[in-house]
Image (tube, rainbow, N blue to C red; front, side, top):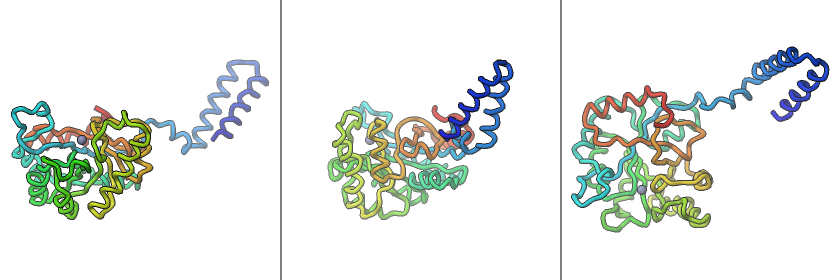
Amino acid sequence: MIAILLKFVKVSNLAKKMKKNSYFSAVFTIFLLFSFFIVNPVKASVLNLKSSSSQNIPILMYHYIELAPASSTLKGLYLDPSIFKSQLNEIKNENFNDVFVSEVANSLISKKSLANNSIALTFDDGYEDFYTNVFPLLKKCKIKATLYVIINALDTPGYLTREQLKELSNSEYVEIGSHTFNHPDLTTLNQFKSEYEIIKSKKALEDIINKPVLSFCYPFGHYSEYDAKLAAQAGYLASVTTANGVSHDKSELMTLTRLRPGARNGSEFSTWLKSLFKTKNHLF
Ligand SMILES: [Zn+2]
């Protein structure tokens, strides 16, 4: 590529020297540019801002599936279980193709598109309500979900126990991902602590569930370029953020965007989901 560019510059300079006429020089330059892109279509394609291999796959982000305590200051993280149930019914009745985050990653890596109505459900933090309120519905509706667990929160009040996590992990409807040991803001940590939270947590979680941990979730959605590199280095197939977006590309495996379904109920939820497959917005 560099050799071709150098050659192009040399020939262009030569043309300038040979022909003082600036009009000829401009035409000659345009001709060379035209030849360059026609003869080198693959190299020219790197100039495209967005690859044609991108696909719209809504990755839905949930936290608590329970009624928010009156005292809570984080009511936006809670969803009424009856509304959640209506959302799962819509996914089932409208035949959306539910997949794990690892399946999203594998489709992007292999460039084999998933069905064009594919969605992925994700749950952050590993709250106890995932076991009591979410898991029974996933099994009943036969819908898959990816659960991101804070390892040091396991066996503490309000969070899953290790035993519950193992049972979830053995289900065909649940995939477990890492959400670090301590849920820190990774951008405030030094390099060694970031490595611990991102890389070491993968192995620690694998030792608990006795299965590969294929994806990672940045706490608070905060990450630096270095954190994304560590996640790739750790061997995760993908990492999810809290940035809003629906279109995914292989180049963004370590920064997959998600969407909050909110309290959309029944057909309002499925109409919204369907609209996401048509949008051309990369981020919104
Ligand atoms: Zn979290």
